[in-house]
Amino acid sequence: EEIHKGYFSVDKNGKLVDSISKTKSEKQDSTDISAYDLIMKNKERLLSFDEPTRFIFSHSALREGWDNPNVFQICTLKHSQAEDNKRQEIGRGLRISVKCRGEDKGTRMDVATLEDDFFDVNTLTVIASESYDSFSKKLQKETVESLSDRPVILTLEALVDRVLTNEKGQQLTFTNQSAVDLIFQFREQAYIDKDDKITDKLVKAIEEDTVELPTELVPFKASVCELMQKIHTTANFQASADGKADNIDISDFKPNANFAKKEFQDLWNKIKIKTVYEVDFSDEELIKNSVSKIDKKLSVKKVIVHITEGEQKKNIDESVLKSGDSMVKTKDITEKADSLLGAVKYDLIGEIAKEARLNRKTVAAILQKIRADTFHQFKVNPESFIKEVSKIINDEKATTLINSIVYSKTDNTYEDKIFTVNNFKGSLNSNILEVKKHVYDYLKTDSKIEREFAKELEIGEVLVYSKLPNDFKIPTPVGNYNPDWAIVFDTDKFKYVYFIAETKGSMESMQLRAIEEKRIDYAKKHFEALGHADIKYDVITTYQDLRDKVML
Image 1: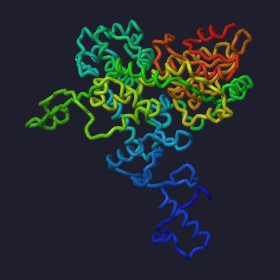
Image 2: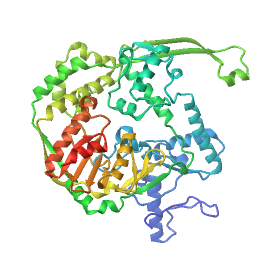
Image 3: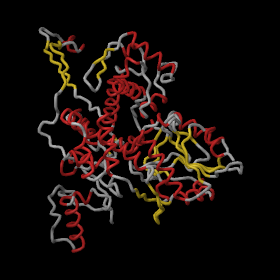
Image 4: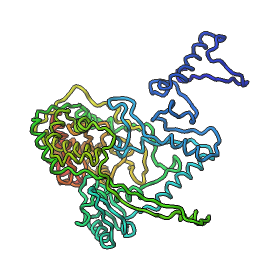
């Protein structure tokens, strides 16, 4: 009764019905009134998770009044021939979800928040009639075909004559020689494999900002990396024709019996305690160091405007239209925008204070002391200025705080329910492993490095292990941090029975992104504060590296 309510404007004989009629019993009358009010007057309540009533509504009603970012299922009950209508209906369903509960309520579940889990959460399910089913497959086929013209491997054809543009507006066109040089160097560095496909090593290097390029291309590093990411993304794009395309699709994925093992519970009970940190540092020192680094390092991206004009050819026929050659380009110029400040008002101090997690007074002091020519870059590109200045301040803050931070245990703990995964999806052919020692029956990996490491854990001297849930986060002054692995060894040969690991492609500090390196330093202090001598936290690259760190 709690989930089943309704009202009808027309009865089964086609006659109009007054849902608030007084001719019914008081109970039925009250039920109809509350159902009518809920459905027609309190849509926000109806769409909330706190309201138990389940409902079906016309998809055409998904306009302003019914708009909700967490509607991800379309069931087609009518036969529609108009492709425009179908495209609009699917378009309304392609949305980014919003967190409705907890501390981060209202946060968009976008790539920045979910990272590799983005598509697992933001998936539109179409329960389709035959005509709609064929349409959705056709739409996905069009998407694949539109991507087919993009390069999927790094070849001369993908590079030659391609124009690169850097932050200063300078341009460089790939020649045959510069393309050969790049491909040769990428092969030497194992950034591409024997089939010229981009490897996980290059993807990782781009993420960590450690990509090595021929000297000529160094000033265009950002543009080269963007191109490599597009090639890699296109090569790995797969359209899901139907639900069977994913090998694994579990809506409520829970841990297996390994989670309840005494050995893992002993580890979990030790690390699930939450901590808080306190810092005591000099504002003057942070201001001084930030001003120096901003003046020295700040480089705001200049906005490049590419203008193309054209006109239709005369005396065109059907064949010309089909070939796509009916237009002729008459103008093609590139200009630098002198300023983007325009009429948009920015709370410059407030935005930087928010990103850098500092008070407005400290941010204002930093901005007042930077050079005039440095501050002038704000007019060139305000968004980029805010982003880059915030990043530099965060880097300096992390360096300043690391020696003055103290972590303390609290009475709060992480709950076991964070190990329940919603919408666990993937393919056994790519990113899912079937495992025995993990706390789940399946393990999703983010990279080749993680995949190989997990395989070694399965055959190594390990009793049980877990890839730590995304909600297991350690607070740090530069954002929350989520370690990769919790591992329990099964022999007495090791100094540390328990190990919390972070897997990285390289151990060199200079090859880790500055913020990531600082978060790791803070994590070490967090685990030290927990006070367990048998727990070791460190960064490792391989299983052998792990063994070396835990041996007696």
